[in-house]
View 1 (cartoon, one colour):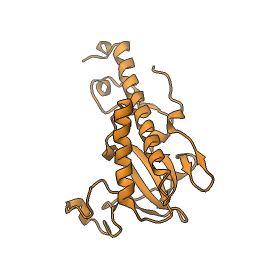
View 2 (tube, one colour):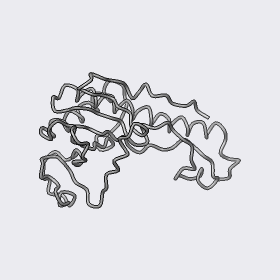
View 3 (tube, one colour):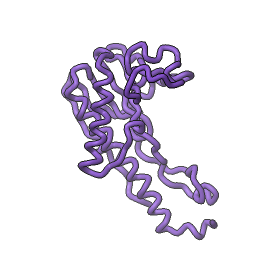
View 4 (spheres, one colour):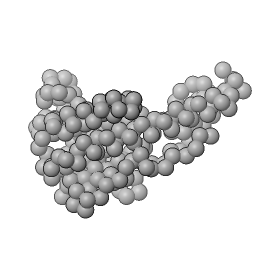
Length: 199
């Protein structure tokens, strides 16, 4: 398909879809955060990764835009949350609360974000030390190859990934958006973060 065949209307539709993904992922972050505010072990939650940033334009991975070198809004593939805990206990309850919040979001608003699309990075509230990720499996250990990573399941439902290195600057004020802080009572909505107009 030639560049001329990519009409302005088609490009606008693609950009609308990509920005809707930002909106849906941010609504999912809000739903999960709201479900966790009542859990006493949760100290704070921040939106991190590309969903926390203002969208930017780039040549996408998918054709025919890639071949024609047409820039679209960045494609968000998932939503990342940093979760600070007072104690890494009750992780299965947090996993279930996350899944239930996303199911309710779909039932109430027809926003379909799967639980595996919401990645949770678990941190110690006192030190910011990365502990692992909240596991998606409904049993720990699940008996899958992923469960064989060193340290995986040492704390129930706290998953480890071979070769993964946590980037501490992911939670810096320049890269993260705090959604909830129990100590201060602070709370904000990711859905309130601005999105550009379609162009």
